[in-house]
Structures are given as C-alpha cells and as structure tokens.
Amino acid sequence: MTSTNRARAEGVIVLGVAYLLVQAFWIVSSDAEPAFASATIEATAKIVLWGCGCFPIALWLSRRANTTVPEAFGLGAGVWRGVGFGFVSTLPMLAALFLTSPKGFDLDLAWGSSVLGPFAEELLFRGFLFGLLWRVTGWSVGWSILASSVMFGVAHETNVIPLAAGGAVLAWTAYRWRSLWPAIALHGCMNLWWDLASGEHARPTLGPDLMSAAQVLSVTLSILISFRFGAPRTSGRSRTSGEWNGLSPANDLQLKIADKLQAPRT
Image (cartoon, rainbow, N blue to C red):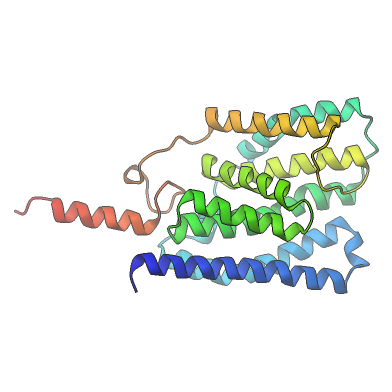
C-alpha cells in the first residue's frame, strides 16, 4: 500500500471511530436521560466514553508515527498560556454578561459545561480527530479542519452550520498555537459566559442580541491574537517529528530520505 493510500485509509478509520463514539454517546445519554440532567455527569460520561474509545486507535497510530498520544493530541505544555488566551479572547462576552444581568452561578453547570465538557469535546474533535488526521495520518490542514468541524456540527444535531463554523475556528486555533489548550480554554470560556447569561446550559446561537454580538467580537479577537502570538508557520526540517508542525511524520521521513539521496557520496 502506498503512503497516500495508507494515509487515506487511516484517516477513514479515525473518522469512523469518531462517528461511532458520537453515536454511542447519544445512545447512552438517551438511556440515562435523568442522570444526564447534571452537566457534570454528562461531561464525565463523554470523557470516559470518548477517552476510552479513541485511546487504542490513537496509541496505535501514534506509535507508528513515532510520537506519543499527548503529543499527537496537542496536550503538551502551555496549559496556563491557553487559559490566558481563552480568557482574554472572550473579554467582550464577559463585558456583555454584566450588561445583561447574570442569572446566577451554578457549580454543577459551570464545572460540567465550562470545564469538563469543553475538555471532552476538544479531546475528541480537535485532539483525536483533527490532531490525528493532520499530525499523524498526513492529511492536509484544510481537509483535517473541514472533517473535524463538520463532524462537530453534525454531532450537536441542531445549529449544525454555526457550530461547524465554530469548530473550524477551534481547530484552526489548535493548529495555530500548536496546542490543544487554547482551543479548550476558548471553548470553555465562551460556554461559561453564555451559561451565566442564561442561567442554564444554552447552545450559543447567533441573533440580534448583545451576547451574540459579543461572541462574534470574541471569535474575531481570538483570531487576531492567534495571528499575533500563535506559533508561526515553520518548516518541518527545523522541528522534531514529535512536535505539532506543518508536516506529518511521513513527510518528515520523506525529507530525510531525500536529503540522504542528495548528499554527496564519500
């Protein structure tokens, strides 16, 4: 099997596993609907189900690519940098929150919807799906973002297009920062401000209201900050194969082989 066909096959496997895990969660949540009224229980179920489900595939592909699962997912260093990015980017939503009178703080909602939930969703859609498609199987950045964002939108069943667009921004954020933490923090902060504004877990929707306008400003600000402070695009030759860079390990190996062939014989 050629490297191109292998990349396509591995990509299809990753996509298929992600789809099956999403469907498995909807089956579990429908059977345990009363318990899932708790945002914390729902998010914990996502972490357990999706984490256990995607880990074997991620381990297999990561070992083949000579990297580790955390590196393939983008879960290396930079946690607090990611948190700072998410908070600063969503300052427009925080300001709008105080202008619209917050509905109150609920610990279960905040922990489940703003911490555990975003971590679980970013782990599956931007870590496993986008990260493995781009970093390990060798898919292009564009196709990897498209596949992960469409899957993210479809998984929510409603508001598919706006959520897919949001998923594309989050995937690009993970790519630009070479880390999953900024995407997790951005996702979590936006959920937190939305939930505090509504008093319940609400899926963000764009409309003629202050919070929607503030969300658009926050996304725009996150993109500008990412362009200014995110990792610059560099050649894969200057980075080790274990890092998130613009080239897959397969492409790194091809470059090394080409260098060997072109080197003068002694």
